[in-house]
Image (cartoon, rainbow, N blue to C red):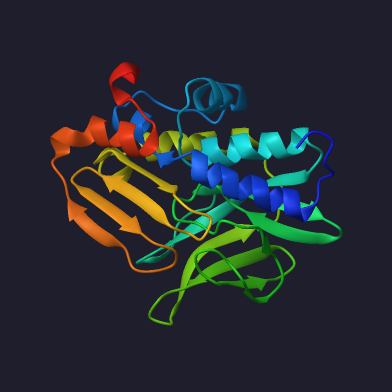
Length: 242
């Protein structure tokens, strides 16, 4: 990577490598240890402690890395689609990378997300493991994914306005302390296992695996095996972080 110019090929390589190596996980939130949006703390957690995290940590740290190797990167606020419509602003932190006069959506912190940069122009774009449809105007963009049943599912509604990581702090604090939210219900971890979109996901008593862009195969597991599975499948040892 040393000396390589900040081009789309390198960006795609780094995004895929991150999703293969660094899990999206909630262990510090689940155990009420607390997480922050501070980049220095995030780098210690991910690089030195070999941990993962959620969007404010993973995209926060990855955005910092890209800036160090001369990519032009904005942190941006996204609303997340749910059954009732759209969540609030600042619910998700994502990245917009500026390259050769174009903007690319990059995300390593949304769990089962696209593994390659997505050109932010209106239309359908190739993605891994699913095609991506973008709807873009001057200030905003909407990301939807093409499901196996042929439908398009809205995922994120982002704003192009650049943000600092500090802006996300209040939302990060809310998501890890508000009673009843899924983040503190069960321990979970997920990561890509292949550049084709293969993935493994663990959540409490359920283990899910997928080959490429196919269907997930579910297996019920004993919650008492939690640390064994976290170690074996994700390289996480939760016993020593409590």
